[in-house]
Image (cartoon, rainbow, N blue to C red):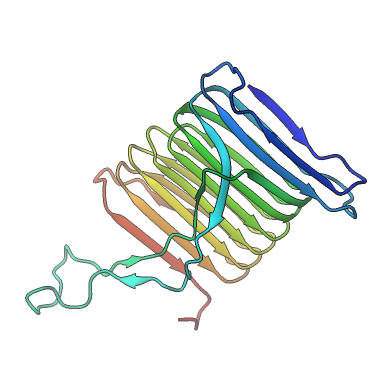
Length: 250
């Protein structure tokens, strides 16, 4: 099934669409969409959905968890269990809270004007969660496995996400304006979670390691990595947390 959904202009527009139970080229695919456009909007919102090669896929909502992005906790301290300094195989590590989560009972939501999203879904039992709140946000989602979650709050944000080869999760939170991000996750049971909190940040995250779980949080404005964060080790497994903040911040 390919769908093109667009709000009507010149009125306060609310479009609620569900494709549950509709026969498609795949089997058992569902999509629930909510579009809200204010009466003062110059343009509406646009959403394109393609589930033709998917089976039992679901397109629905995503929500903030309420977690504080500053709550990153040390896994290991500076001494091991024997009281000695860590050896070369031990590292300081951080765990970062999950900032967004799937809302399977909700709808993929566009609230504002000029928001655009293209969703292409394949694989079996895949899930895509989308929320765009603000104006002129853009999303490009390609889901081949697992979950893909995108939450954009602000104006002019641009997010591109993809999963493939048995990946479990690609997740992106953009809280601010004019942020650009790409999250690419492949490899069995791998996860990539990127959060941009601020304005005008440019961030890429690539995870290509089976079993790896990578969290990358950017807090601040006008940050840009010369090279994208890329995890391609063949060792596999483990958790990696990256936090990027302006100099002088805690």
